[in-house]
Length: 129
Image (cartoon, rainbow, N blue to C red; front, side):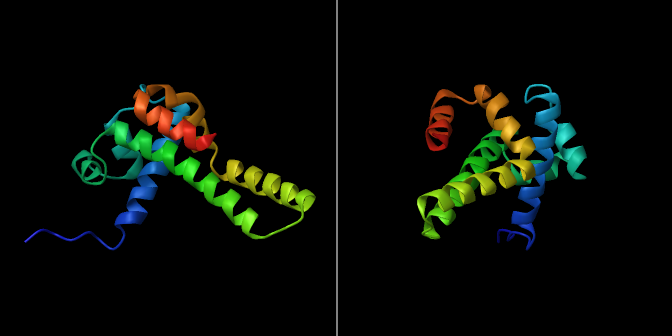
């Protein structure tokens, strides 16, 4: 019988992404190893591979997750049905807050997106646009 997922599975994946984004932002995607990601997360390399197949999957998840959060933010502000000037102010405020809290993910998106294969890069950058 297959083992089920731990209750904190999603939280652990988010922790891995946050720590990997920090490493990628400081050292670059090619300059960061899976061993370093595992160590930064306090995990064994084998445990890290339980959550992500490889370093590339982590890169895709960081970039795509950041763009998805920005999409959600825009949708939330649009749902508030503010007037045009108020909506623009709120959108700028929320985007600045998001970037302040996600500096590493944003840096990965802008700096390391070039390491994505063409299909993934175009999909993610298309969503960003």
